[in-house]
Image (cartoon, rainbow, N blue to C red; front, side):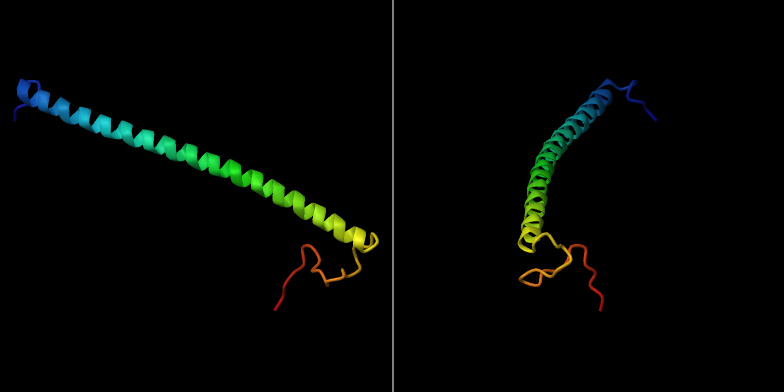
Length: 89
């Protein structure tokens, strides 16, 4: 069996194939890096949105407590569900 070092044309062909593989892998890595960047941006946006919603929720709870006269144990005017309520069947 002839090794690539013994046949220069086969060695050149082998190197071309390796270069194609390397190029393909580099392109794939670049695509994956771009996708990771997109996902990181999306996570940052969702993190910010979540923080805003949590803030809004806390303000809403504070408003409900003020409307109830500072008595969180009393039912709200709309029969609000207590926070962390369990739903059993």
